[in-house]
Length: 255
Image 1 (cartoon, rainbow, N blue to C red):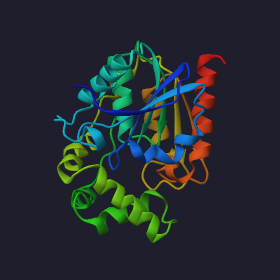
Image 2: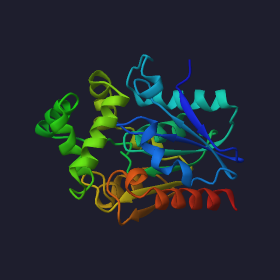
Image 3: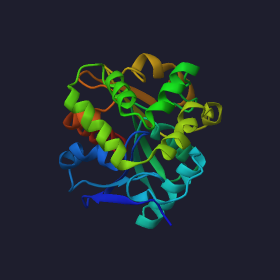
Image 4: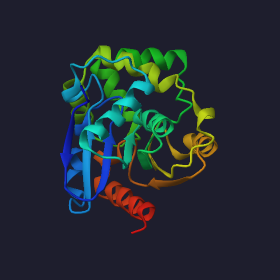
Protein backbone atom coordinates (compact mmCIF):
# COMPACT_ATOMS: atom_id res chain seq x y z
CA UNK A 1 0.00 0.00 0.00
CA UNK A 2 1.38 3.43 -0.95
CA UNK A 3 0.87 6.65 0.95
CA UNK A 4 -2.14 8.65 -0.21
CA UNK A 5 -1.89 11.80 -2.26
CA UNK A 6 -3.86 14.57 -3.95
CA UNK A 7 -2.84 15.29 -7.54
CA UNK A 8 -3.06 18.66 -9.23
CA UNK A 9 -2.29 19.60 -12.84
CA UNK A 10 -1.23 17.65 -15.92
CA UNK A 11 2.09 19.19 -16.93
CA UNK A 12 5.27 17.37 -17.96
CA UNK A 13 7.32 18.45 -14.94
CA UNK A 14 6.49 16.16 -12.01
CA UNK A 15 6.58 17.27 -8.35
CA UNK A 16 5.93 15.36 -5.13
CA UNK A 17 5.19 17.79 -2.28
CA UNK A 18 5.66 16.60 1.30
CA UNK A 19 4.44 18.13 4.53
CA UNK A 20 5.91 18.60 7.98
CA UNK A 21 5.28 17.45 11.53
CA UNK A 22 2.15 19.44 12.36
CA UNK A 23 0.10 19.09 9.18
CA UNK A 24 -1.04 16.86 6.37
CA UNK A 25 -0.90 17.70 2.65
CA UNK A 26 -3.65 20.31 3.05
CA UNK A 27 -1.12 22.75 4.50
CA UNK A 28 -0.31 23.44 0.84
CA UNK A 29 -3.94 24.19 -0.07
CA UNK A 30 -3.46 28.01 -0.11
CA UNK A 31 -0.83 27.45 -2.82
CA UNK A 32 -2.80 24.99 -4.99
CA UNK A 33 -4.23 27.49 -7.44
CA UNK A 34 -0.91 29.26 -7.97
CA UNK A 35 0.86 26.31 -9.61
CA UNK A 36 1.02 26.37 -13.40
CA UNK A 37 -0.99 23.23 -14.07
CA UNK A 38 -0.03 23.16 -17.75
CA UNK A 39 3.67 22.91 -16.84
CA UNK A 40 3.47 20.84 -13.65
CA UNK A 41 1.79 17.78 -12.22
CA UNK A 42 1.99 17.95 -8.43
CA UNK A 43 1.26 15.06 -6.05
CA UNK A 44 0.67 16.34 -2.53
CA UNK A 45 1.32 13.35 -0.27
CA UNK A 46 0.27 12.41 3.27
CA UNK A 47 2.88 10.72 5.43
CA UNK A 48 1.81 7.58 7.30
CA UNK A 49 -0.37 8.63 10.22
CA UNK A 50 -1.57 11.85 8.56
CA UNK A 51 -4.58 12.79 6.47
CA UNK A 52 -5.75 10.04 4.17
CA UNK A 53 -2.74 7.91 5.22
CA UNK A 54 -3.83 8.12 8.85
CA UNK A 55 -4.65 4.40 9.11
CA UNK A 56 -1.27 3.21 7.82
CA UNK A 57 1.21 1.74 10.27
CA UNK A 58 4.47 3.68 10.61
CA UNK A 59 7.88 2.97 12.06
CA UNK A 60 8.56 6.74 12.17
CA UNK A 61 11.92 6.57 10.41
CA UNK A 62 13.29 8.68 7.59
CA UNK A 63 14.20 5.44 5.77
CA UNK A 64 10.56 4.38 5.64
CA UNK A 65 9.51 7.89 4.59
CA UNK A 66 12.06 7.90 1.77
CA UNK A 67 10.95 4.49 0.55
CA UNK A 68 7.32 5.64 0.68
CA UNK A 69 8.19 8.57 -1.60
CA UNK A 70 9.85 6.20 -4.06
CA UNK A 71 6.88 3.83 -3.92
CA UNK A 72 4.48 6.71 -4.59
CA UNK A 73 6.54 7.82 -7.57
CA UNK A 74 6.44 4.25 -8.85
CA UNK A 75 2.68 4.08 -8.49
CA UNK A 76 2.38 7.33 -10.44
CA UNK A 77 4.71 5.98 -13.13
CA UNK A 78 7.27 8.71 -12.51
CA UNK A 79 10.88 7.68 -13.05
CA UNK A 80 12.21 11.14 -12.19
CA UNK A 81 10.64 14.05 -10.35
CA UNK A 82 11.26 17.11 -8.22
CA UNK A 83 10.66 16.92 -4.47
CA UNK A 84 9.29 19.78 -2.38
CA UNK A 85 9.39 19.35 1.37
CA UNK A 86 8.43 21.28 4.46
CA UNK A 87 10.06 21.20 7.91
CA UNK A 88 10.26 17.57 9.10
CA UNK A 89 9.90 16.54 5.47
CA UNK A 90 13.40 17.93 4.91
CA UNK A 91 15.03 14.93 6.54
CA UNK A 92 12.86 12.60 4.45
CA UNK A 93 13.67 14.30 1.14
CA UNK A 94 17.39 14.24 1.90
CA UNK A 95 17.11 10.55 2.72
CA UNK A 96 15.13 9.97 -0.49
CA UNK A 97 17.87 11.63 -2.55
CA UNK A 98 20.40 9.43 -0.74
CA UNK A 99 18.52 6.14 -1.10
CA UNK A 100 16.93 6.79 -4.51
CA UNK A 101 19.21 9.28 -6.32
CA UNK A 102 17.94 8.23 -9.74
CA UNK A 103 14.45 9.48 -8.81
CA UNK A 104 15.23 12.99 -7.56
CA UNK A 105 15.88 15.65 -10.21
CA UNK A 106 16.09 18.36 -7.54
CA UNK A 107 14.93 19.17 -4.04
CA UNK A 108 13.20 22.33 -2.84
CA UNK A 109 13.48 22.37 0.94
CA UNK A 110 11.04 24.80 2.57
CA UNK A 111 12.07 25.79 6.12
CA UNK A 112 13.62 22.30 6.40
CA UNK A 113 15.10 20.22 9.16
CA UNK A 114 18.66 19.31 8.00
CA UNK A 115 20.02 15.78 7.90
CA UNK A 116 21.63 16.37 11.29
CA UNK A 117 18.19 16.96 12.83
CA UNK A 118 17.02 19.81 15.03
CA UNK A 119 17.94 19.01 18.61
CA UNK A 120 15.71 20.19 21.46
CA UNK A 121 16.80 20.79 25.02
CA UNK A 122 14.98 18.80 27.69
CA UNK A 123 12.50 21.54 28.60
CA UNK A 124 11.62 22.33 25.00
CA UNK A 125 11.19 18.67 24.20
CA UNK A 126 8.74 18.25 27.09
CA UNK A 127 6.81 21.26 25.80
CA UNK A 128 6.61 19.77 22.30
CA UNK A 129 5.45 16.47 23.78
CA UNK A 130 2.78 18.38 25.71
CA UNK A 131 1.64 20.06 22.48
CA UNK A 132 0.75 16.66 21.04
CA UNK A 133 -2.48 16.93 23.06
CA UNK A 134 -2.57 20.45 24.55
CA UNK A 135 -4.04 23.07 22.20
CA UNK A 136 -2.63 26.00 24.18
CA UNK A 137 0.90 24.64 23.92
CA UNK A 138 0.42 23.91 20.23
CA UNK A 139 -0.79 27.47 19.58
CA UNK A 140 2.31 28.78 21.34
CA UNK A 141 4.50 26.69 19.03
CA UNK A 142 2.74 28.05 15.94
CA UNK A 143 3.08 31.57 17.33
CA UNK A 144 6.83 31.16 17.81
CA UNK A 145 7.32 29.52 14.42
CA UNK A 146 5.62 32.40 12.61
CA UNK A 147 7.40 35.21 14.46
CA UNK A 148 4.62 36.12 16.89
CA UNK A 149 3.02 38.25 14.19
CA UNK A 150 -0.33 36.64 13.44
CA UNK A 151 -3.79 36.82 14.98
CA UNK A 152 -5.32 34.46 17.51
CA UNK A 153 -7.72 33.38 14.78
CA UNK A 154 -4.81 32.36 12.54
CA UNK A 155 -3.24 30.34 15.37
CA UNK A 156 -6.57 28.70 16.22
CA UNK A 157 -6.97 27.69 12.58
CA UNK A 158 -3.51 26.13 12.49
CA UNK A 159 -4.24 24.19 15.69
CA UNK A 160 -7.57 22.96 14.31
CA UNK A 161 -5.89 21.81 11.08
CA UNK A 162 -3.32 19.82 13.08
CA UNK A 163 -5.97 18.09 15.16
CA UNK A 164 -7.96 17.24 12.04
CA UNK A 165 -4.93 15.87 10.21
CA UNK A 166 -3.37 13.55 12.79
CA UNK A 167 -3.33 12.28 16.37
CA UNK A 168 -1.08 12.59 19.40
CA UNK A 169 0.50 9.15 18.93
CA UNK A 170 1.67 10.07 15.43
CA UNK A 171 3.09 13.41 16.57
CA UNK A 172 4.99 11.72 19.38
CA UNK A 173 6.11 8.93 17.06
CA UNK A 174 7.67 11.29 14.54
CA UNK A 175 9.26 13.59 17.12
CA UNK A 176 12.50 11.60 17.16
CA UNK A 177 12.56 11.54 13.34
CA UNK A 178 13.28 15.24 13.04
CA UNK A 179 14.95 15.96 16.38
CA UNK A 180 17.42 13.07 16.52
CA UNK A 181 18.17 12.37 12.84
CA UNK A 182 21.88 12.50 12.05
CA UNK A 183 22.95 11.21 8.66
CA UNK A 184 24.62 14.36 7.33
CA UNK A 185 27.96 12.64 6.82
CA UNK A 186 26.31 10.20 4.40
CA UNK A 187 25.44 13.02 1.99
CA UNK A 188 29.00 13.91 1.00
CA UNK A 189 28.75 12.31 -2.45
CA UNK A 190 25.24 13.53 -3.24
CA UNK A 191 25.13 15.62 -6.41
CA UNK A 192 21.40 16.51 -6.41
CA UNK A 193 20.72 20.27 -6.70
CA UNK A 194 18.81 21.76 -3.76
CA UNK A 195 17.11 25.06 -3.12
CA UNK A 196 16.57 25.90 0.54
CA UNK A 197 13.82 28.43 1.20
CA UNK A 198 13.65 30.02 4.63
CA UNK A 199 11.25 32.49 6.21
CA UNK A 200 12.69 35.64 7.72
CA UNK A 201 10.35 35.39 10.71
CA UNK A 202 10.84 31.66 11.37
CA UNK A 203 11.40 31.22 15.09
CA UNK A 204 13.17 27.85 14.76
CA UNK A 205 14.66 27.10 11.33
CA UNK A 206 15.68 30.45 9.93
CA UNK A 207 18.58 30.97 7.52
CA UNK A 208 21.12 31.57 10.28
CA UNK A 209 20.23 28.24 11.88
CA UNK A 210 20.29 25.99 8.84
CA UNK A 211 22.80 27.56 6.45
CA UNK A 212 25.88 26.00 8.09
CA UNK A 213 24.69 22.38 8.37
CA UNK A 214 23.04 22.31 4.95
CA UNK A 215 26.02 24.00 3.26
CA UNK A 216 28.24 21.36 4.82
CA UNK A 217 25.96 18.44 3.98
CA UNK A 218 25.08 19.33 0.37
CA UNK A 219 27.44 19.91 -2.58
CA UNK A 220 24.90 21.80 -4.71
CA UNK A 221 22.71 24.05 -2.59
CA UNK A 222 21.49 27.62 -2.77
CA UNK A 223 19.53 29.62 -0.24
CA UNK A 224 16.67 32.09 -0.54
CA UNK A 225 14.66 33.86 2.14
CA UNK A 226 11.06 35.05 1.92
CA UNK A 227 10.94 38.29 3.87
CA UNK A 228 7.24 38.17 4.77
CA UNK A 229 7.12 34.53 5.87
CA UNK A 230 7.76 32.56 9.01
CA UNK A 231 7.87 28.77 9.14
CA UNK A 232 4.82 28.32 6.88
CA UNK A 233 5.42 30.11 3.55
CA UNK A 234 2.78 27.94 1.85
CA UNK A 235 0.21 29.48 4.20
CA UNK A 236 1.72 32.92 4.82
CA UNK A 237 3.07 33.76 1.33
CA UNK A 238 1.77 31.12 -1.10
CA UNK A 239 2.23 33.10 -4.33
CA UNK A 240 5.87 33.91 -3.63
CA UNK A 241 6.61 30.35 -2.56
CA UNK A 242 5.20 28.86 -5.75
CA UNK A 243 7.04 31.44 -7.87
CA UNK A 244 10.34 30.38 -6.31
CA UNK A 245 9.62 26.67 -6.63
CA UNK A 246 8.72 26.98 -10.29
CA UNK A 247 11.70 29.22 -11.09
CA UNK A 248 14.18 26.78 -9.53
CA UNK A 249 12.69 23.79 -11.33
CA UNK A 250 12.82 25.71 -14.62
CA UNK A 251 16.50 26.48 -14.02
CA UNK A 252 17.29 22.83 -13.20
CA UNK A 253 15.33 21.62 -16.22
CA UNK A 254 17.05 24.17 -18.45
CA UNK A 255 13.88 25.97 -19.46
